Length: 75
Image 1 (cartoon, one colour):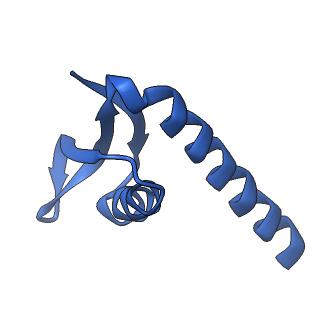
Image 2 (image 1 turned 30 degrees about the vertical axis):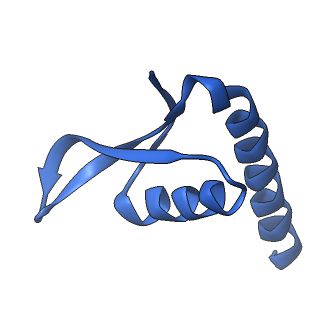
Image 3 (image 1 turned 90 degrees about the vertical axis):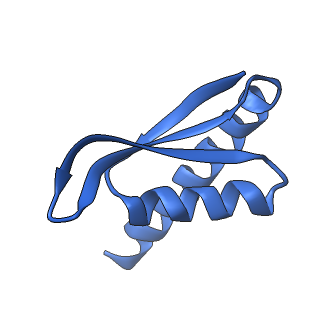
């Protein structure tokens, strides 16, 4: 069964997270949701299997913390 891990604001962000998760060995599926805006969907669900949900949450949290740290250093 697939579970929603995160809702990305656009396809670019969704693909980055997907690539990061797959590099960690986590199976990921993207699902467009919301309204189409100029040919693309506005949001994407990032889904992972139920068996990998906890690990995926930890990996995503780690990735977001690293990103925030980098943004703070650049200011």
